[in-house]
Length: 434
Image (tube, rainbow, N blue to C red; front, side, top):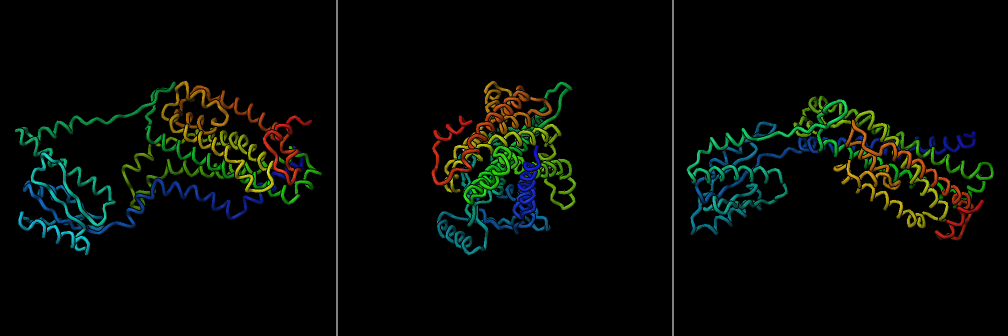
């Protein structure tokens, strides 16, 4: 590696790593993870609702009291979560009662009202009316409570012992513990946690390749449009210039991905005591996080496939930058590249659920999809390496070398061509130039 190439690498890396955009972009990843994993709990605490008041019209005369008894939750400040009032109604006054209830909701004297029909055990439908019906957790809670009560009523009508049936139903509930079989024995592993972690990391890889690939393209277009390339290539070979840009900008992505990996490792290992310290502990959230397995193997392959994917796709971005004369033209030419990357991301969803199928094996060897698809197979299969893991690295390196060779030919001619926007056919001719 010549001193001139090192100078290009240093320029591409140092000038960008000190910018506010890079620093903010690096910090965005941890912030996003915090929001994804803890945001719901944090904001639920900050915006804790006040006591809600509901009026209940129980035409059956069998549900109201049991429903109120089962909805006895309290808020964190000790206040009751709900206050219920029973509304007595006759057929003659039904219309006027509903008018007054609707008026009370509109004027915010009550949060809403519920209407339990007389034939609740047969119709199995309760009307919930409120000014806002977007609280799906509350709706689900009310629905489960009514279902519990109505089920008990139906069992009693058939002469069955409700308590004994419920006891047997609870005793028969099964907790399915998933274990992955490895050469060293069985390892307990959660499919949901594994998929979530794979999705987050794969998305980070995709985003960084796309961002820095486009950054490389814009850098080439800028130097070409300002005629800087003519001066630079007089002292350094075009291939060295392109390689220096690739390595310098790739180093930015590696820096961010390394910081991102350290943060994920910290979340996996230290989030539980941190959440508990701030009183944000959520058993469901912590259970999912606690089953994340972000091992050194996954971290290593994350970096490796980012580098391979970046060099592969960014070479294509560099070729686009060398062929066009403006960023507007570049936006048009880069669409097929971005489209292929997004297809790989969508394939990752299916493959991560079925990583050992024959189709998953072969599609993970296609260079356009390898960085995301093979990484997903490795991440969900860890600590077992899926078939074709090392073969995919070999094929990716081979085809990346071929792409680099072809792009270097295009880059050599394209950066010195102005005015005319070359066609793909003409670009292919440049590859044959000696």
